[in-house]
Length: 168
Image (cartoon, rainbow, N blue to C red; front, side):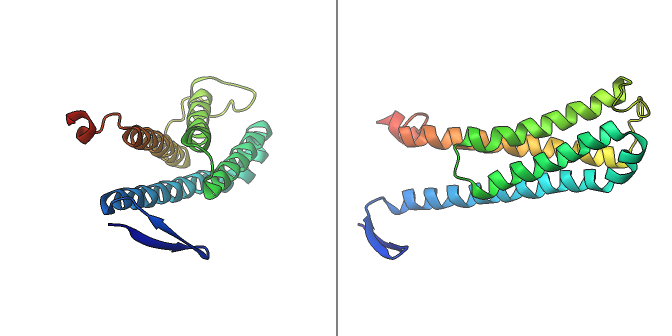
């Protein structure tokens, strides 16, 4: 049984089974949801830093410049998710790297006094800081899931780890 698909002004016959089409559709929907979630999380991270930008620039200018870099990086990485034409590694590793980098930066300024921030050593109860840690954790978790989902799907298409191919 074949299905007719009309897309972008041309017709083609798709000979895949309905189950394969359902799997491909499910994968596309999941990918779109993950990318949308990643974008929302990245913009949340940017917003948390925007809210604190002016007071931070006034009190600790070097840390304020760091905030500007975090905001810009969140927007750039978010735009990459919107485009979404890269491989899983190209698409999601920068997302995870940004989440980890900002998480480590927050922890670093709470443990050590630095020229960037000497006022927050030991201040683990900052509400926006805790919100940022939560968002950063979610960013890393979503990116890790998206990368693992792509690998599982790639393996299934190659017949690796697919029960029906192993039983044959």
